Image 1 (tube, rainbow, N blue to C red):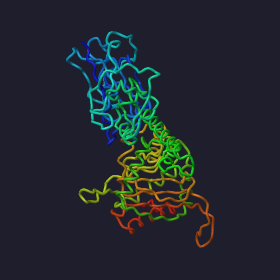
Image 2 (cartoon, rainbow, N blue to C red):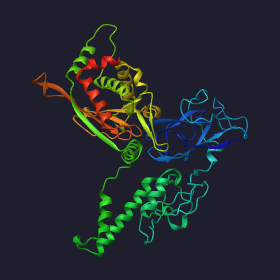
Image 3 (cartoon, rainbow, N blue to C red):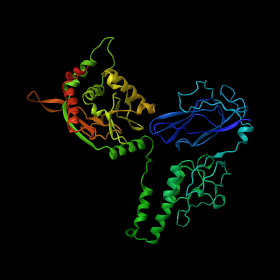
Length: 491
């Protein structure tokens, strides 16, 4: 007899605790092979294809596209073994007691077994008779009763069933999508975030019928119930006191919450928010800045890119030149290529420069990392920046390409602004900001002239160095911008 195994959302590393389902790659009834990608998820770091370690027939999926699941929540179930329809390269076990699996969960780390062609099978006694399973949280919840094991899904409630939701310490209020008291039972909720949201707003999950598969309660169901409760509270207050100027403060807040547009702080935006908040909490930062004449730097770049012939490489960007200048400056001032170990109360100076650069994409701000930038020339750094930027815009960056930076370069001049006070990319010690390069009046060789001027700003961790070191670093950057020949000493 085949076994039905449950595959849960694996630990994707880098401290990630949840992921959003972007696209299912298999359907119920499909045959999958060992390590075949079954779902594409988006974490706070990148898009990841998750492979299933089992080979067999998909009997159930958990979670709709766009829903968010915590690590450890069920993703799908697979029937493996004899009779599972997965004997064509799926790697199923030889018997009911033996199940072959890779034990791997990330693409690129599988067994190397060939991926079977995805095909749909007709309903059999296995797929037709298998009851739908509802994943239920395994932790107690005061708003939903004791935890229970997965159970068979109850029959769908009639469309015309009466609806109600009872907030804590208040009379029942009508809520769209609620179930009648007669069918109360185990609560079909996977996400602890949904449970927390319900507790905060006094929504009884036992009285809701979810819109997800097999009645799974989604965030949208709880938010709909919250809106209904707030509408009821607002109407009750306005009825009791008809004059507009006498509306209670609580009713006003309820109306404001109802009309406000709420954007979930999750994914890339949530990760950025957490990291910036941590930087502000933990790092005593300071900022210094200077204006520099970039006319000679722009002339040097034009000369580099004007070289023709078959030996000419790709064009060198201004960002690549600034990145190369940064690596030279960090060699002179290694204090800024470090991090602080709070537990050991030590400053850790890092031997390699892994240079991050800020890149704005449709998914939000990301910081790809150029590895071992200290060993690259401007052309090599520019090529790697171009590759990582293209991957960032396409959403193909891996978690490894977004982590491990030791110093960050932020070119906010592309947004048409001159200056900024960057927030350090925790746990790094400094970030260099570069404004736009524009023609400005400038005293050059004792005379007033129009020159290409740029503002450079350095935000640094005051624990790793004092103003003298930070000022020396920034002044060296400015000197290289104004006189690129200064950089030749370090080449």
